[in-house]
Length: 276
Ligand SMILES: [Zn+2]
Image 1 (tube, rainbow, N blue to C red):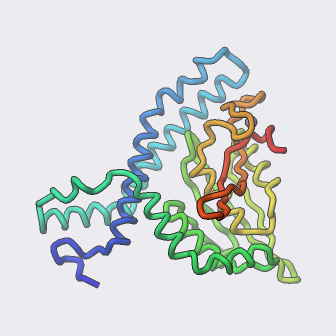
Image 2 (cartoon, rainbow, N blue to C red):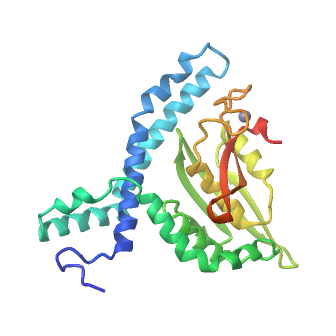
Image 3 (cartoon, helix red, strand yellow):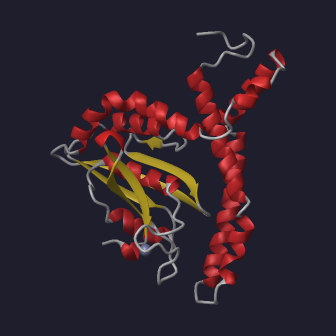
């Protein structure tokens, strides 16, 4: 591996792709903040109803959390390292002409593709494991982290508690998964989304009623879907709000035909009231 100070080119392609994906993620957060004001005043553009104030307050708190999270991520070591690298690289070579041919978007996908390729070899193993009662928790966590580098999992207590938090739409979501092992070795997973009011309570009910309750990979992928699948409209009824003024708070997967006769899993946002 090259030394970091050689013309600022100490990073290999994989590191650069990861860094660009990370910056793209920050850019998406900033773009999302542009909608903060419209989101806050949106409840007043509809006929008044009992949840108008609640939606207004949620929009406001959600936007404040968005700003806070952006600040935190901006100061995070991961981000600062990228800036540091860019500075060094620029100091070593001020010719930025090559950047003209560097795409400004699509890095998150590229990063995902890269980690999928890397993971392909372990995939068949993964599928057979998801049906078994005992799960290799550390390995599943490592694989999840590779597939979703932007979602940081924190583990405590020897992987018995897994937590993560991120912003989804205008809400900050904090998830905590508790891993229990029964006497016969079978794993049990319970998950909660922290929050004492809607939509968090509804998210909790939708997580509790998930299929494949004993599969940690499925549960983690579902949690990730709260970040990657925006709940802007329901996949079933196509509306934003259901009759109780709730946004689509459930995430469910379905199998679709993909290229070359393969089957792909896609996640969708669905209202709690639309779950069949
Ligand atoms: Zn619906």
